[in-house]
Length: 364
Ligand SMILES: NC(=O)c1ccc[n+]([C@@H]2O[C@H](COP(=O)([O-])OP(=O)(O)OC[C@H]3O[C@@H](n4cnc5c(N)ncnc54)[C@H](OP(=O)(O)O)[C@@H]3O)[C@@H](O)[C@H]2O)c1
Image (cartoon, rainbow, N blue to C red; front, side, top):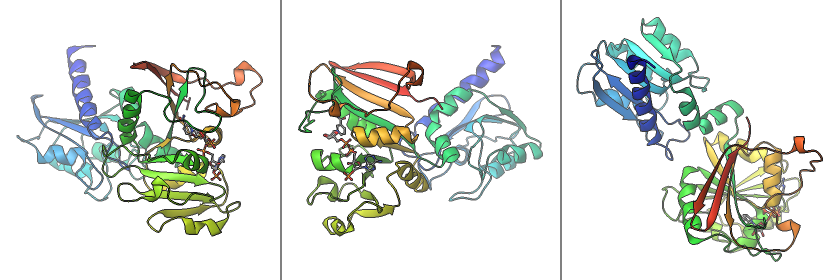
């Protein structure tokens, strides 16, 4: 790589770093960072998008400008917007600034922008360079891109298990399998998500809080998917002071007389079947880019089968729980040949005290 290209990569990496500062807060928007150089290649401003409704990265960078940007360049990890949303189009700002070169890492998958922002810049006589640090940019906004393309929220499935592959005892008790460090890591990990999903049985058996313990404000939406609606009175999720709860139920099987057990502060939505895809779609429609499935084996297996899961993270404790196959983290996929099994990619392994954390992604 020559010196000039090295510098372009350096500035795009800076834009990606700035974008990552909005990691847990930009949904439904993407994470975007922008770096502006003057005509001599000196850094004169930078910005990032923090939250929907707040200025876009480019707008923040222009409002922070210390010098005239005329004849300069801008580095952005995502194509600039060209539509009037909650904030004005960034393309107009770039054009009116007199900037001569725009480095964009990836095109915006949002149909309102996709390619149109680049076209407008080119039509204004600006040189556009597309594709720098593409892999990093795709990774940073994989949830936003997934939601825009599939109209489903990007799903991560999480479970905790013993070294013999059990997620609880036969009687359903599963508190606590992993160590304290793993559990507090899960609290902060939840901050990355817009919603956390469980099934009705986990609600009945575990009565979980599903919160970040105040690390994220507002807390992720807690979602319960139920076929029966047979949910207990006095569940922790019915306390809406610190976090909101949504119950989604399958109206083809549920006993709707149980609705009276659910307090008014809890939102309820009916769907026509038990296909988990409906949840991923409902949450995507709400602008949720990334959701965490913390359900037991039945719903987890159904979620994988309906392509709602893009990544898995498991915490494995050096303990033996023994017991029944029903306490496996996943149910039967009825694979008969090794070529049918699911192989995860991009796997990562880490140690948390004496627990092991394993992550992996499903192939696109
Ligand atoms: N160690 C861990 O990480 C971990 C995590 C979560 C759960 N668990 C354990 O897992 C056990 C519960 O397992 P589970 O599999 O029954 O989990 P679940 O999370 O309750 O999921 C199953 C429930 O989801 C609802 N559901 C809606 N659509 C469904 C579909 N298409 N397929 C399957 N279920 C659907 C049903 O609720 P209704 O019955 O209300 O109709 C069903 O009973 C508990 O003992 C819990 O402690 C362990």
